[in-house]
Length: 93
Length: 326
Image (cartoon, rainbow over all chains, first blue to last red; front, side, top):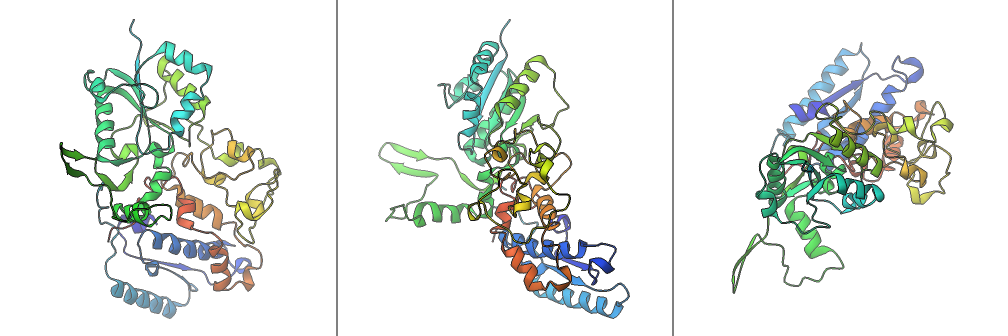
């Protein structure tokens, strides 16, 4: 979220595709899924398109998938345009 | 020797912070003996000109409660800042925005539309909304400008100390007053409450299991709440893990989960984001392998109004601050 507020127009979060028993992050990947789902709802409430944040679960060795996911996300953000994050907040600032 | 001058003032608030001063009970008499109250709109009839007539820094301390959301509030807090040696942001609204801060999910126009036109109990056939100026027979009447954005006190004037809580409990208020009167104050900018999470002082901590996994989010009215068990273990969102202690656990003792009014502990930039991380880390950990995206979404949908839940008291002080303006 801090990245969003500071400069970023979007956030692509890439997590390990494996589940707790096979992954060194244990349940961290599941928490990331919950976190992103909830964050999307929060961002909607402050007028930020939830499509600006995306979670992909890709293995570190699957480079073609990483490249494709990044390209797809970039395309999506081009469609959405620049975010309104740095716009001032009307009367009262 | 002249007594130190003290001012109490209110901005966008509910009056609960004035009530907590009254809740000092007999101690209020000691305070009244030790200081000279120069402003206290809820109880005493001082006027703005009385404050204007004081010299700069002449008031020893101003306790200002409420968020700042109108032109008049801005003027008054700037006046009090100039006339005061110390300014204490008193209560959640002045400290982190508080409940009025939820107005930042809306704008002035949408708030006026709702409050003056759409609320079922309102009859307003002419669709009248507050105007800053209106001409009448005897001249022009004015009202202060109502802003789109609710601000914390320190977003408008420099603040020396913060007394958290909705409202701050009398013991913390008395400690703060004593500290000021004796000059025994911490570093400027300090929050005058313990720097530990509420979970650390919660009476239910002892019965809290080592590992909690919430299968389904519940709201307090949906279940019969066990008065001994950790709220999180019962599926209720409790802000204890990401909220500062010092409140005396009054909500917990009344069998209600913490709502986060004391704000975050030192070093946490965004109480809502911290809370989101804390809660999702204990959501539905069992059966992860079989969990689909729909299952994840279903569990998250159980958090009704996540933005209002996690940012209930702290939206203006958060990284988000407010809804983007169209």
